[in-house]
Figure 1 (cartoon, rainbow, N blue to C red):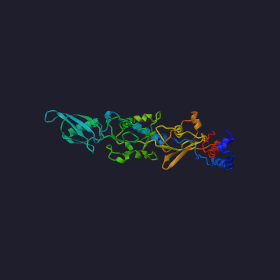
Figure 2 (spheres, rainbow, N blue to C red):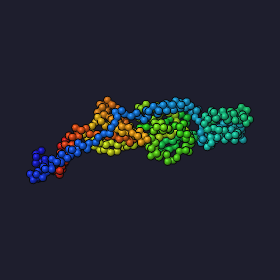
Figure 3 (cartoon, rainbow, N blue to C red):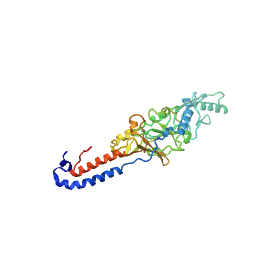
Figure 4 (tube, helix red, strand yellow):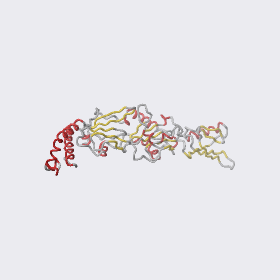
Length: 381
C-alpha cells in the first residue's frame, strides 16, 4: 500500500500535514494504554480444589447410606406408610354371604389400620409380613379365632412420598409404587433431567431430614426451581452431593434405593462468567458437563494477547468464601491435564501476556490511526 493510500487517499499532502502531527502522540498514547491497562489475573494457587462430591465427609456419608440401604430393599421389606391401601383376607372368618373376610382398607394419617373384626392395628413402619403376623396375634388375643390365617396385599402405594425438585420436567411430590425403587427411577418418574440440569444431584435422605413420608412438612414454595438452585452443599449441610456426570465414581449411586421422605434436588447448571482476553467477555450459559475449553469457544475464543498458561478460575465454596487456582490451557490442549468441568457461578479470568500485549497494542494503534485517516477500517494483522 502506498503512503498516499495509507494516510488518506485523495486528500494528498494537505491531509498528511493534518494527520501526521497527530499520529505520533496518538500512537504513543494508545500503546501506553494497551501496556498498562491489561487484564491481570488475581493471585491463585496451582492446586485445583477438591470436587465437592469427593470430599472425605461426603464420600463417607454416601458409603454409609449405600450400605444401610442394601438391607431391606426387596418388595417384601417395603415399610407400610400412612395412605397405603391394603387388602386384608382372613380365612375361616365368614361374613354374611358365607365367604371369607376380604376387605380393602387404607392406613390412616396416624399409621393405624382399622378392621371391623378387631381393634385398630398400628401398621405404619411394618412390612407386609410383619403386619400379617400382628393381625394374627391380635385376633388370637381377642379370641376372635384360635388359629387365624391372614393374608395382606399392598394395593396402592400412596404413603412413600419422595420430593424431586429443580431441573426436572415434572418437579413435585412423587410416590414410590413398589419396594426397591432407586434414585434413577424417581428422576425418571419426574420426567427426567432438563437440558439446563447441572452436574450434580443433591440428596437429603429421610434419615437426616425427618420429613413426614406424606410430604406434609414440605412447603409448595420449595418445589420451585429458584429454591432448588439456592440449595448449596456447605459445611454442616445435610445434603449429600452425587456426581451425575457420565463415568464418574458415583455412577452406582444412581441405583441407590429410595425411601419415603427423601428429597432429591437437581440444581441448574447456571452461568459461568468469563473476563479478560476473550472475544466476548461476560456470562455464558452452562449446559451439563460443560468445560473450560467449551466456554472459551462459546465466548468467541481468545484474543491475541491472551496468556494461555495462567488462566485463573474462581469458584465459590459456600458461606461467602471462594477458591481460585491456575489452569494451563496449553497443557489441556496437549492432553497433559484434564479439562475443567465448570460449575455454577465460576469466574474465569484470562490475563494478557506482557509481550503479546505490547505487540497487540501496536496493532491496535496502527489500526486506529488508519481508521482515523481514511474514515474506514484497514486490516493490519
